[in-house]
Length: 457
Image (cartoon, rainbow, N blue to C red):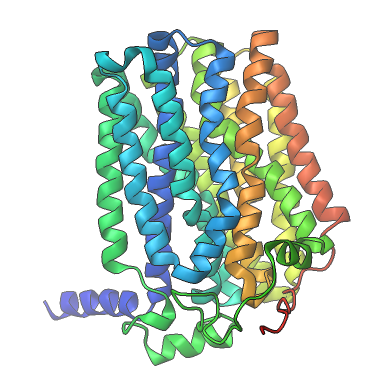
């Protein structure tokens, strides 16, 4: 018994004295819920297309509707996050996401048949606004809680959560769609979102606001460069009152080639994610005559590989940093290896019509994409200390422009060619462009100096 009590105590003590990992778990939970809300429509897409009589092009526009407002909302939401904090912004966003799922479910009622397409479109636009704080806030949480030598793992785990979320939720959502209908599936997703909002509001805190943070852990993370003075109300508790315009801040941060190259690369890498979230189940259904439930279940395989790749990315990047103390080498090597593998796998997939081989190659592609995903780690490493939230918002917003263009472009290509070959070529090209940005544009990686504000009157 004493040994058992001793083990239990050590486990509890380990969690209690590592509050940064609890913060990461909660942030990943919020992203998991968000990804479930986003990908639910791609699971329902074949049924929706049949029930509503949609063309492939119309379905592509519907799948991209989320990203319209998601991208547009990022700059204003980034300012809101800096003023009103991560906890309220993310929690309210998750709750609104639950509401949008209920609205989509209600659109399946017979009284809304003629207007179902418009209702779903409006709900997806609202969902985009509601979810913008998740991306905007993640850079703040990473910078506040994690020392530089742990941000690689933390950022990679967070960036690969979409894959794990798909692996966990897609089979469930696909089963519900197949056996109970897409409206019931959206009700189930709403219930998951409401539970996530409750957990988030109940537990999450930043270092500046939690009594659970021990002095030992605070010293450790501050010595490693964590910005523990970030508060729930603005980026830095000692930051001056802002007098710059948004345009001034955009110029100050993103005309820097290092950050500009990072943004372009993030767009290209996100395009691969959006292919997976929006079209991969339909790829299996259309190319290999899979059922919806089977396609949703099989999509978990590359999703798990993407998560494993993301975790491996963090371990590799932080190991290189600890060994070499070279931030540039530590962050870029995994990107070159991972995104290169992803591009080659997409191209190879064109050469086969065997579903097993195609799934293996897609699994390799998304493992590589996970291995090369360090976007949020780079934001936490490079953003000006007084503009972490704003920088994260813009990087995530521009990166997710791919969520507008990728589903629509793929929809048009499929309509024109009746296959996915050109879509796979385009995904491979996105990966090669991302690699080129990190070779030719970003240069030596280091934190940018604070953005200077004009003195207030």
